[in-house]
Length: 289
Image (cartoon, rainbow, N blue to C red; front, side, top):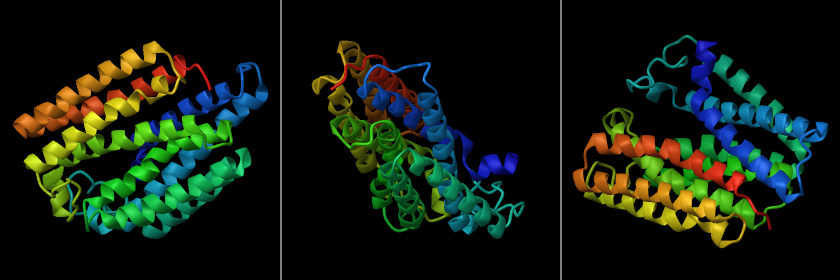
């Protein structure tokens, strides 16, 4: 079980499922008042959670199969089941394929668009983002696309139409990923270099990387206010998003000012709080279309 948890990157997978679940409820609200006693609502939500968990786990499994030899080089990942030898490539492949098939089937039962988006997400993450990590910092941009698909998938699972609310949910998570990923890359840069990963904007911890990271936190401010500006959420969402964005901007400014790992670590932890708070406020202060 411990090896399975490491293979599927459980904490990351649960964050993805949480994001999709919040968007599912938002999408359900678009359809009208939610009947909390409805069997269909709860069964569809459960199908999304299980299917989303399996598809995300499969993508992470494929990622670890491809990066097995690289994971062995890094302290942070050397104890994963594949590089440590506790699990074979064949075992991981069978498990990942099984999770991908079952997960896609469950999501596809909700509606075809949800199933197609989940397949696209797995392919882009495992077979585009993963190999690009050693070639160019553009990998972060590519990885941000499948990374932002969970809220879109969750929304479409309940409301099978990619409308302005779906695109707003996607945009918030898409822009958020840049300071999030770059903060992590700054903290782990020494370890990443052992595997040849190039994830910081300039490829190293310097003022250029810090400035670009800061600029993306500035861009996140107007994006996080889109639900309010588009009249899909109320003033409470606007106030909370503004406060969370200002805190995030301050943390990124400190990284730009100091260029210290401790500042990057604070920005990284700040990103963990930022996204779920903004998404939850969107849900609780949702007005509709």
